[in-house]
Length: 148
Image (cartoon, rainbow, N blue to C red; front, side, top):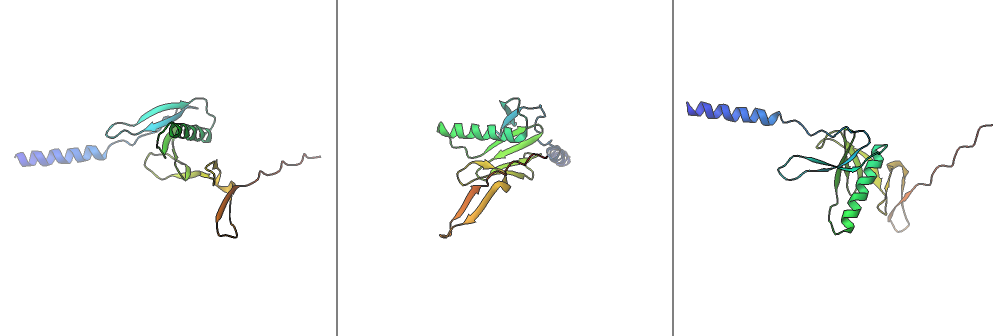
């Protein structure tokens, strides 16, 4: 009898743990959040900036926060944030976006050779005579001529 109760309890706990809701990013308009995932605790959303017009500006605020912490002696190489229902991941490769915290990511901004962030299509890669890969930001397109 005790064995059947124990089996039922294990099955019930397995069913409940399988139904755990995934973490969702807040949808507050224009608010940029830093996401903290403390060991064994719930995810915490801290406001970094308000009145941000687009997700790329929020990514820039997160990069700024990461750089400032590192200048103060920190060692964080990766920062996670959230903006209007999407998660933002800033790391050594650049910036990625995702709708879920642990799901597939969309690569949005790449790091140039000097560490700046740029749209991936704006980076030109070339090999010098010495075989060294060089990355440069492409020059901006000239403005269109006014129509007559």
